[in-house]
Length: 516
Image (cartoon, rainbow, N blue to C red):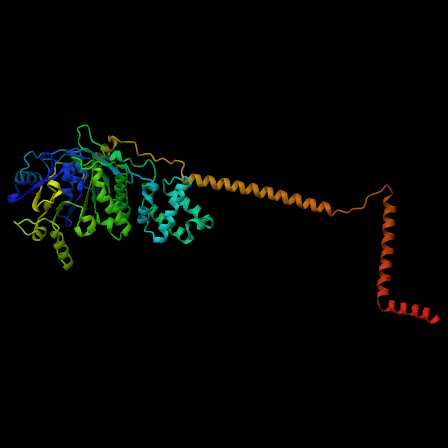
């Protein structure tokens, strides 16, 4: 099957080969089924098939057991006999063990190369989703991104965003008139959510050097696509961080890759494990964003495959775009389970040989109900398919083997050392220092001006007596005489103004007029 990926055997006795056509592999797909039904093995063999066809793959390792893709299987493995028997049963004549080129990634930098993005690249919509912000808080975050663009403030890591929010809070009186109300309470709430994100390891996600998309779209010297495995076992402790990061990566692929139309094979295949985490409590704006990406990214040559337990976990508008499907067993224990099982069965093109709903309920481990796109993108007839065995090791490799692969990777050393460029934090800190120095200088000048003014006013009030060449004794004598004369004159005037004075005046005047 040169133009398709061999998935397994279907039909009577499982002898009809079932494959995913590479030409339609960029039209997305779904791998669903209850826990323990074989989804991980299906994910592994599909990654092997795409790699062998020269298509790079990006996938997350939620349970920590996909690293075995980097190592060939072994005849000493306990399932060797079962694998060989199954290969013969489904007509997999050239089955053998093989390893595949793998690049390991880890947001925490422990089990792979560090993977980062910048706050600016994440954008306000996804960051608001990550921080679980209210509508008002999301509005303030949008203002922050707008201000960063207008004032040339690069938002690279969390401290850049935190510094910008502090600046907005301090200058909200000026910003309110142009951008609307910037509530200190809302700014404080965003800062608290950023602190929670820091505690969850979000500091490691944001920064530089940021991930270059070309590094996840590599092929090896043999032309096989490299399989990029993101260590997600620890990351799953913060499911919202996990889902937001994968959605960001999809958005970046959508925005940066050129249009290629309908290529003969995808440029990249993206597996989104635990897809329900993306849609749980997601606002409509986010679901619309995912739908837009899923609808348009196929023209960029990227195929997206969602892995989840139940197809009902995926919104209908997105589910309708997933043409290639591998449905493992679903369990129906409740009325709701039976309803969802029936709805899942109704999405397939009927096969007259069996009842689809019953088949989904009955298929065993390693078996699935499959349907792949055929000519002109028409969904194929549903088949009960026995999934082919993996060629690589089933289960994880040793930590020492992983470390050796990381150290010899084509991108070894590129992302290990963080960079801290001159960005919003440093720019705003410099502005604050300049403002503090300017304020200090202004206070100093004001203090000097006040001191000069006090001295000037004090000089105008000064009225000292000029000192002559006479002796100090004469001066003191004259001063004392003048003072005593002034005191007697004041006392006399006061007495004349009083009752006794008035009597004296009347007596004198009366004598004068009486004499006339």
